[in-house]
Image 1: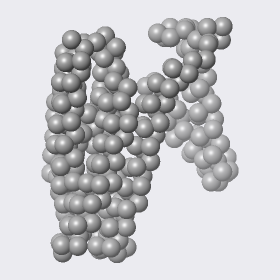
Image 2 (image 1 turned 90 degrees about the vertical axis):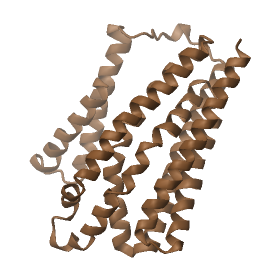
Image 3 (image 1 turned 30 degrees about the vertical axis):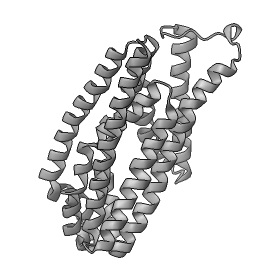
Length: 286
């Protein structure tokens, strides 16, 4: 965390220095990014190889290539990478649906509302990473009670966080929309953006149920199930319902409603699948 915060903060400061103070222009952003990442990497290398105060001691003499370990890593890592790809593909199609429903203004509203809504995804991603780690430890310990407790507790905490985030966005939708529409030319999308901010974030409430299930699947080494669930949630449910609702006639509002309903269906099905899988593990590990 310290390394990532340091890198991001340093990048922001160096951007200003290289672009404006030193007059490097746009190439200054590249220099700033490279330098900040280099400094961050040096800190991590210091912790790992010099100070050696982490839980892992890395030495080349202990390195022995293992196909079994590599296979386990790829079984989780490859589906996780493809999951990120599926989200990007889903965004492409959702943008197309927004254009179909509202033209250029439609995609402007969707992009702005989505940026705000994605702030609510950040804590879910953090909880998901923790769920993967704790679920993996519990699975290695063959402790299905701890596995289930961590899984359900993560969903509970993430849900409470998202409840606060959604309530804030919906309550201050007008003020948030102003940040994107303060210029005269952007006033044309203001009302649609306010409407989007009062509908679209609702999907965050049930997202923890599907995302924590995906994280739990990764923790027990079943990355392919995580990938299937992510594709089902993003490409099938979100895009499918958004496209269907738009064709039914409510215009841009159909995009927001489609994303919300699609995520709700995916959340219920994903959570059910997760509970069934944990019960099966409990029977198998007795």
